[in-house]
Every structure is written in structure tokens, then in C-alpha cells.
Length: 493
Image 1: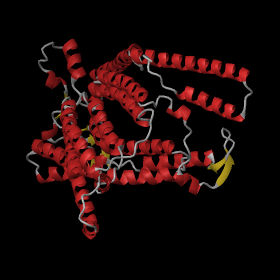
Image 2: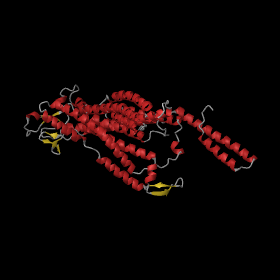
Image 3: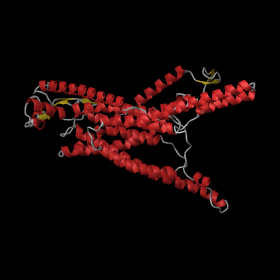
Image 4: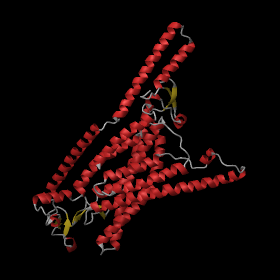
């Protein structure tokens, strides 16, 4: 999956270059200067001369903006909610109610807490988006591109913590600070959670399945139902106006006005990027994630097609050179996925303990379960807890096998990351960002544009020798030069 993620991004660069060339947006940022946002113009405290244009424009001090960005970052850190508290309280209550069915209680607690966590995630997502919008407005970004990039990054950070904090807790923190019989670790007076008999990887797979699939189902229902409700309310509000008018066949633009205003593509991008994180970061624990993502996207593309064609007004087109900060986020997720999957395989799964046992003791894994168990200290008198899962001796100290296994785990992480990152760099080097055919076409267009400029200059020089250069000639010369610069010639012409 890590190799697929990088390969996907490399080929997306090629597709992006092809689309940008087709729509004449490859040099968009170089040719056109973006004006300040209207909100920035209205709220800027001072006017300063632009060093590029020499025109006085609204100005906001860069130091003040950086201080506001840092303050907003602190708010983001504070808003990180401890999801393990909710899970711990629910599991503790279920264990009290079902003392005899310990294994069943653990599964019920994991599934129930996952469902409650999904509800909290969807609820907090709306709160985080509103908070990110207010923080971005407060930071006073000058252009719309800067504003949208900052807003996108904040919302993604909020949603990353919102969606992935619970899986990260189960994968890397749950069961790590339990202690041993007689010396259990506690937090706020409660005993720390331990993994079930099957290990935390099973619980992580359950969490991911419920959160990812549940989110996709709820989003698809919302994307189908909410536009229908909004369209019904829109038609109902306009029905009284239409009755007052004469019974005429409505024009095309009138029918378009009756549709819902288009809300942009931000939510669509955010949904796909979060899905990309699920199928790459935690694929070692939940290998079915790409299958569920494929099935969801097959339905999603039809729902979006119906929504944008039949329910929304035609959006106003805007030029863009690429997808902006979204691609940086996708690249960061692809690199994070390598690190997280390495730690999942090394510390959460039983892959390396089994490998070590096969190498040192028995190739057939006979007696492996007893190898992973430890006896409680003699001072611990509860017979029901005489055996627990850990690499400790009878005094609760870590055994030599624990340190050997830790060395194997760290060595595996280092080797895994170096090998995968090396292969990723090779893929990045082998796949050019611009297709060869497109690069030749661009070179051909530049060559023909230079030829047209040269021919035009020769004709102007000859004409200037024959007659004096008037103001109208200078004006014509300037505009012909500008047209030639912007001319997009087909290779066959």
C-alpha cells in the first residue's frame, strides 16, 4: 500500500500536468497577480506600498500574522480530546455488569465504544470546521489562495486528530502501561486498559471497520438526503413567486436559479483525503479497507454526478494550476503510512514474536502461547490471575527475551523504513512529473511562439523603415507583442 500510494501520487502529477496544459493553467500564477481578499481589504489596519506594483494596498504586519498563527496552533493542540477516557469508562461499566462473561464483555465494550466514538467524531467534525474558519479569518491572510490553504490545513489537522486518535490509541498506547499483577498501572484512580486475549490488532481492526465504513455510509446518506431536502425547501419558497407570475414556460436560467447554490468541492476533497489516510496508514491492521473504499467510491461518484448535475446550480469556474495544499497533505500521509505500518507490524502484531520463537525455539510454533505468558509474583494471591500475557519473570522484571524482542522490533522498523523509502525514491525518480509527449508539445509550442515573435519583429522593423513610427504604430506594436506572447499554437499549424 505504501508503494501504491507513492505511485498513485506520481501518476497524479502527470495527470495534473496534462489537465493544466489542456486548460491553459500551467503558468497561471506567473501570469496573473492575485488581488487581496475583500475581507482583508475591509479589515486591514494600514496601507502600505506594494514593492512589486508600487501601488498602495491594504497591509497587515507579518509579525502580527505569525503570532496569530502560533496562537491558533495552540488552540488546535488544546482541542485534541482524550478518546481513551470514553472507551475506558464504557468498558469498565460493562465489565461490572458482566463479570462472568469477560471475553464477551470486552468485545461488546469495543464495538459499543467504537459506535459512540463514531457519533462523537461526526459531531465534533462540525465544531472543528467552524472553529477552523474563525481562526483562519482572525489570521488575516491577504489573498484567497492563502486563506483557503490555511483553512484547509487547519480543518485537516482537526479531522486527523478527530478520526485517527482512537485508532492510534488502540494501536500504540492501549495495553502498554498495564503493569503486572500486584502492581497495576492506574490513571485518575482507574486501572489502565489492557488488550483482549487476541491482542490489540483485532480491536484496532474492529475500530477501523466501524469508523471508516460507518462514516462512509452516513456521508452517502447525507449527500443523497440533504440536497433533496434543500431542493424541496427551495422550490417551496419560490412556489409563491411562480404562482404570481403568468403561466409561461420557464427559461433555462430560471430553472437553474431554482436549484441549490453550489457549496464548492471542499467537503469532497476532505472526504477522499481522510479515506486515503484510512487505507494507507492502518492497512496492516485492516487489509479490507481498500476494498470498502473502492465500493464506497463506486457509489460516491454516481451520487456526486447526480448531485452536481441535477441538484446544484452550475458553479462559477475558477482557474487553478493544481489542487493546492491537498497534494502536500496526500504526500505527508503517504510518508506517515510507512512509519505507522512499520510500528504496527513491529509492536502491535505478533509477527516478530512468532518469528523470534521460530528462530530460537521451535520452527513449528509448538508451545508459542506458553512462551508469551508469564506467572504473577508469589505475593499475588488471586488464583484467577496467576498467568498473564507478558515477557516477565516471577518478580515482575522483564526477561532477556523481552530485550531481544525489543532489539528485533527496532531493527525491523529501521530496515523496513529504509528499504521502503529507498524504493519510493526510486519510483519518484523513474516516473517523470510531466509525460514525455506533453513535454515535447510544450517545447514545440514555445519554439513556434518564438518564431512568431521573430517574424512579427522583422515585419515591424521593415515597416518602421518605410514610415515613421506614430503613436498608433507603437500601440499596435505593443498589442501584437502581447498577443504573440500569449499565443497557444497547435504543433501541426
